[in-house]
Image 1 (cartoon, helix red, strand yellow):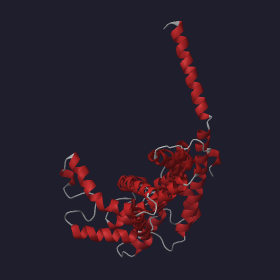
Image 2 (cartoon, helix red, strand yellow; image 1 turned 180 degrees about the vertical axis):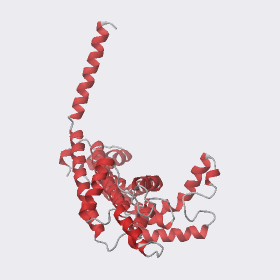
Image 3 (cartoon, one colour; image 1 turned 30 degrees about the vertical axis):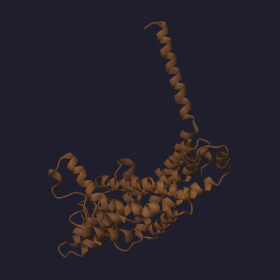
Image 4 (spheres, one colour; image 1 turned 45 degrees about the vertical axis):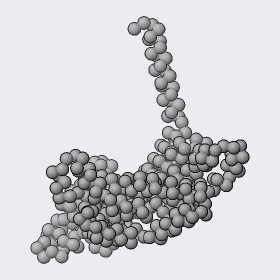
Length: 354
């Protein structure tokens, strides 16, 4: 390597180090670190509060076993000592916290043969994420265009129709929507599956066949989640776009003779997206918990059914791990919403976001 090539390589390395230093000293990195530290403290406080609230419930997991006459009192006492239920709530909490920091262990499940709760959660997360992400995509793909069409055609027939649909969707509880779709699925069976995630012969299908089989089973659970969610998003999109279309700079753009499509989809829609980006962050936070009712109705093997069984059986550590996972998703979702808001509108200062 010649001296000129060596100097050039050193210069590139120096430039790269300078860029890395600038990135580390940037507002974004400092903001992310600050929010992550705040999030860690929030998780700690939330875990303590959740743990002691759960302890307020009468009885414990062993009360269910105590109803079985074949289980002796000595066995129950051995279980109580093994699970740490013979200690005070404060001792139980700090023992649970210590094993998280030292071994990354969130405890074992009482009702699932003492399996680690982390393995149980990881088994169910893919099914819940698949259902929630499919619903999120469909909700936004339908609600945004309908909201834009409603705002552009304000008070016209099509706007009124969309508003009626939105009112019906918002007034329909997820519980009722799930029951109605479950009844419809039963009437259409065997054209569509009533419940479950796969068919009996799923293992014998080809890769494409397995994908189609899961998609076939997702139709009604995804509809149940999407029909309730799109109504509110449609109204928010319509309202935000109408507010922007009334601004002076939009009237100025029209007075300059800009095409209406450019005024709406370039100038107005871009500024109307800011609140929607924030809402997307909250949607991310609810990905793992938003399908709780639907999963139980349609026998979907996700987190919803798992958490319900854990709460019913007072499976302490499984409930705690589920709550902490939900709290972590909320913190990450809020952080992503702020960063997306900054990416959409560079004029926004992260330091000004509370």
